[in-house]
Amino acid sequence: MPWNKEIECMPVEEIQKLQLEKLRETVAWVYERVPFYKQKLDEIGIKAEDIKSLEDVAQLPVTVKNDLRDNYPFGLCAVPMSEVVRVHASSGTTGKPVTGPYTLDDMEQWGECMARNLWAAGIREDDIVQNAYGYGLFTGGLGFHQGVTRLKCAVVPTSSGQTQRQITIMQDFKTNALLSTPSYALTMVERAEDMGVDIKKLPLRVGVFGAEPWTTAMRQEIEERMGIKAMEAFGLTELGGPGVAFDCEAQDGLHINEDYYLAEVVDPETLEPVPLGEKGELIFTSLQRRAMPMIRYRTKDITRLRRETCDCGRTFLKMDKVFGRTDDMLIISGVNIFPSQIESLLLEIPEVEPQYVLVVRKKGYLDHLTVRVEAKQEIYDAGPDKEAEVEKKISGHLKGMLGISVRVRLVEPKLIERSEGKAKRIIDERPKE
Ligand code: DLL
Image 1 (cartoon, rainbow, N blue to C red):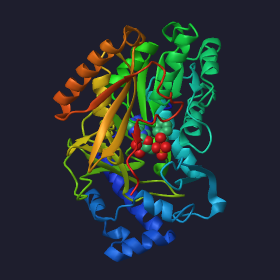
Image 2 (image 1 turned 60 degrees about the vertical axis):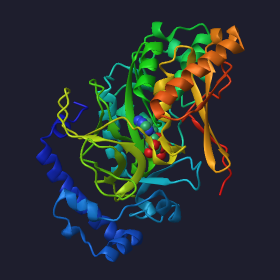
Image 3 (image 1 turned 30 degrees about the horizontal axis):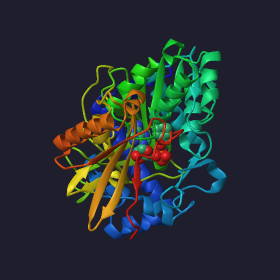
Image 4 (image 1 turned 90 degrees about the vertical axis):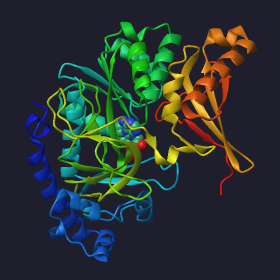
């Protein structure tokens, strides 16, 4: 069986016992091999054997993206390069890229995690899987590729881009499953419509989407417009890419692969743990990785954790859909705003397309936000008065939800740049400090 029922449905006490053992092993592993961790652990005077319970993880120092950048490319590597068989890296749009080296055994674990993800999404041996995550340094393409192979399904490695060809392949190869970012899935729907192809009528049945925040409303939009089930994948380069957490047929939160990852949620200001069920910043410790283990990596992703047995039988800790990233949080007139709040609202407005960007500018000392969203063709054709009416309606709803006035500008259809990977939702025009 490609899904690991024994582990995925393990009683909580047993999985926690396993986690404690693996946590100690990981701390000992990095202490002996990575000077960065040795120094940090020595500073607080903690050794692996001092970790007596899982709660003790909170005493360990956190690791942040800058630590990885300072040690770029391989300063945090715990094995000699002769044992490294793969290196991925994040795009580095906000600075130096972050690297992700793997040993052969790390690759094996990754394959297992990806297979669990795909299996939980309902993908089976006779499926033809179109993998439109980018192949290359990004972990999405090659990460999913090996998972599909492990399930013995046919993988069609289209990678991202060349959208017209993606649609043709979807038609000709009769692919049943699509792997891509949610924003790229929407781009494909539109392109198909332009080509006169109705994706709903194709054999496509399921998609596994991730790599960027997307709301439940966006999920429903994709499900309706593609006529498929939209499942989810979560992960990050620093922890080995996708395969950290995945959802199941219950579509009620993402199961964290707890034998490989220990999750915590903390208050991002104080780093104090927050109770289960409360929102905070997600922190992960890898439990079995060898090339570049991570101790308490701060993801900047905001979510909640829940401990409950799922209808699917899995006992793994659940995380809610990511609400947003701390670095995407906007503070407008003193109010904290996440793009996801605006996305949820826009998706309820029938007069606009689910294509938007948030433009932040500085006026005097204050930040101002403009929501640019595409009008539906018929609204655009109806002229400026109609557009103004819709803009007023949306800003009224936003005021009701956020308590502040936000400018809304409808723009002509197809004006906002379409995504082939991770969508860029925020345009920050504030002067750089
Ligand atoms: O995006 C790995 C990945 C590939 C995940 C394919 C899922 C599918 P990075 O490029 O390092 O790695 O970006 C990691 O993307 O910290 C989140 O902010 C965001 N992210 C990833 N998956 C989700 C998701 C890959 N399902 C960063 N929901 C993470 C929301 C996600 N955000």
